[in-house]
Image (cartoon, rainbow, N blue to C red; front, side):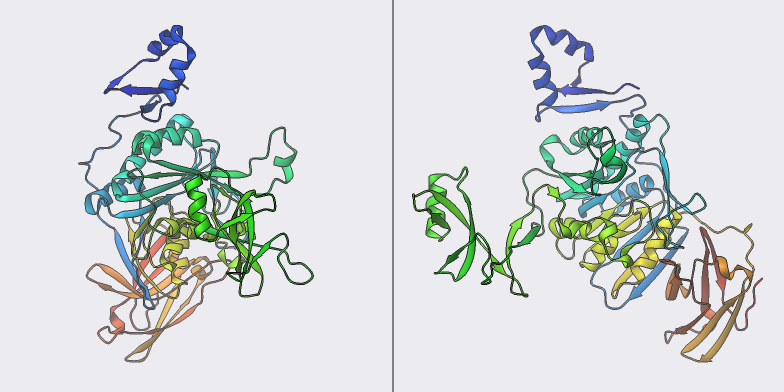
Length: 510
């Protein structure tokens, strides 16, 4: 393996021998040349392609499109089942510079296979469970970089002028990705490296010969430098313990404002800033005349006094705690699933309602689920069957959702045996009942009832296994005024296999 960091100067790539020769002028020259943020550096690896994809490559048509609408949604959600490289090219052609926030949680370069146990609801995934995704790369880090490079190039083209991208990674690839993203987005567009605590320092990692690896990195880059993020800067509140008489410990009372405050040294505030803060009533002077800055507390609904402050780049507070500390209903049984609190902070900070959020490594669907809840348009892409199945069912649990599912590869398999009896009974003109029975019923992971409308399957009723529940064997469907029972189509999933079956009166299929 051979990786090198080679700065480009005036469009001319220099060889490593040039830098070795420059050693006679001092190591400081090399450090400055390699580390200067004004320098356009390139990460070179065997197999790197300057043109990693062909924009003119024809893209496959959709195999199948579904539409699910529940309640009165204010935003649109799109879930795409296909290879994200091709689908990102399609999005760049169809809607360039339209995404305000991109969050991706790509493979970390770990070298293993991750699975999902969403049909059992257990976190103890086994080799018999369906594969969520493969994090294995031919050529190691070189293969991983060849995979990520073209996708980052396409993601940049989808960002609006004030758009931002968050890339979740860990120690295995964070250094390589930061250099690569600096090349793709420009080193001047690096905004932050956020450290998110994924686990406590316990067990094997605490007892190992190195410090516990309890944090993961989230690299934040923008399309253009200097522009603030569109949403609200994330804040946290810290409660203060009370004294016996109900006053916050170690705090002072401001008679003029009628509230408590804490203090901090003036730090690097200039005299002009101190004068301005003094006019705002935010300066506290000790008995000796030392200047401190006042930070006022707020009284919460329960009567406690809390300090509100902006978060920094260390995210380990209760709002973004890992999945093991979240409500059980949030756990989809999907390896590497991230908590909704983490995505809620990111999306609320980077966007406003009506903006578009994209996740090109959809996984368990946390990003687009949270975006939908927050009134943002959302696009999720994943090649995994489990990802699409879990996300579809997860989104349908929301009170309001307008979901389009585009399936790029047909997962139907005529060689898979289907022993299923489908009994249809019309109750009256507006309602009908459908019942399933037969040997294959125990293997059904999801099924739904709908009708075809100009190439789109409009879903009327849908249910699937999620968190160890079983699918119901019967369904009662209210028909739209323009649809007759003979127009209905049944969609059945057996793990990764999909079947579309026309439903007719007293239909029995075996």
